[in-house]
Length: 139
Image (tube, rainbow, N blue to C red):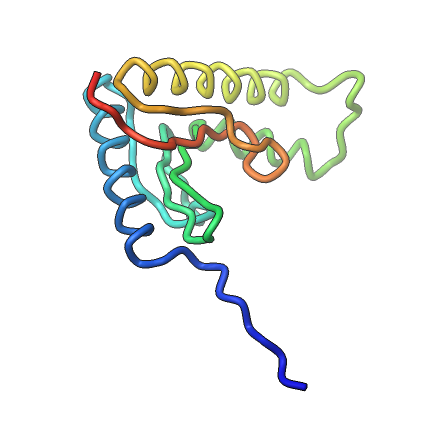
C-alpha cells in the first residue's frame, strides 16, 4: 500500500496574495511611524526591534505581525526564563517584557484596523502575542 503525501503548503496564488497583504501591512505601519521589517517564518537569529511582518506558507497560515523588543530587554528576559521562573512572582524584567508585548499587540491591532485591515489576535499557543492580518479594505 503506497502512502499518500499531503502538501500542506499554500498555493502560489495564495502566497502571492499574502505577500501583497504583508507589503500593504508594512506600508501602513511605516506610515504610522512604527519601525517595521519583513522576515521569514519564526524570525531570524538577530531579530530587529519593532514590528516584524511575515507570511506563513502553510495552507492554513496567513500574515502575522509580532513585536520585537530591543536586544537588551529580550536578552534579559530570555536569560531569566532559562533559569526558571516562579509564575507567582515573576521578576521585574519578565513582567516588563510581557507588558510591552501585550501593549504593542493591542496597539498594532488598533492601528491596523484604523488603516483598513481586518485583524485579530493570533492563536496564543501557536503565535504568542502576534496579530494576524486577514485582509485590507480601503477605508
